[in-house]
Length: 274
Image (cartoon, rainbow, N blue to C red; front, side, top):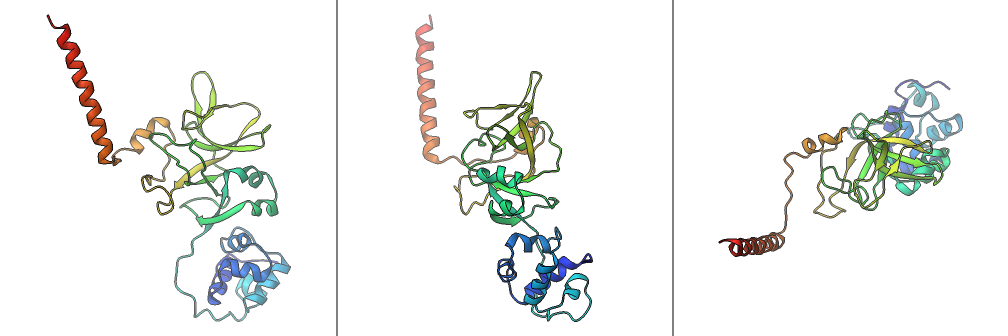
């Protein structure tokens, strides 16, 4: 079956004309929501059985869906909106299975979808950060941060990457570092151990974008620029101008301690004076 370049637009318009969500259409056709999103995103095409089900549910013909020939469905109910491509969100604990298994097992690893960042490729996916291993000063990934990754990007030193260890069958989120002695992966939080680069470690994907929903997280979290500095030396530039609010009671406590230290230093100096 041949499809023209506008198949993804027609299936989206036909679905919207019936006021169906991607989830609604997926249930009626007998596929998972991710498949409908892939059709509408231009990432894949359905096989003949699914195509027949789509045309029946959408009240149109296979010919119209595939190459726009024949009578189209009533599209007058469609709202003029911008179609936003979505990418899947997975947990770090499911990342290994998602990246190393087939379509069906991969779909079971998906916990949700978010709008794709600008210029993200069709194979991009996002991971929700858990724990505090990637928290630090400067670039920061607190728990709840959604990080988008691309598999086809060539990793460079300083990039934030998903790395797996073959013996553990687990995936870690770390920064790729190189110095004069060796190459290694490090968490941003220094209390967690680093991992040396060797034949048993593999870089699976490179981070290209991150975001944090302040409605669901700690209001003290900062929503920072989605542009990740490639070179660790650029972190200072990336964070220029950021203002951090400190509660007044903490400021008062700090000032009191500084005053006591200053008083003790004055007493010591006075004792040493001739």
